Image (cartoon, rainbow, N blue to C red; front, side, top):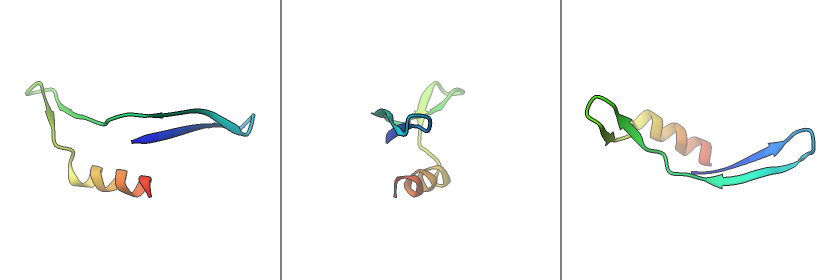
Length: 47
């Protein structure tokens, strides 16, 4: 996922970045599959 932070005060880009989202199951101590509603919400944000 990529993101951009914009300064409203200065009307310019303050930062660009990216990252990887990982769901984590604390009860098992392992990564978990993102639930479909979460994946769908992220996809809507990216379009």
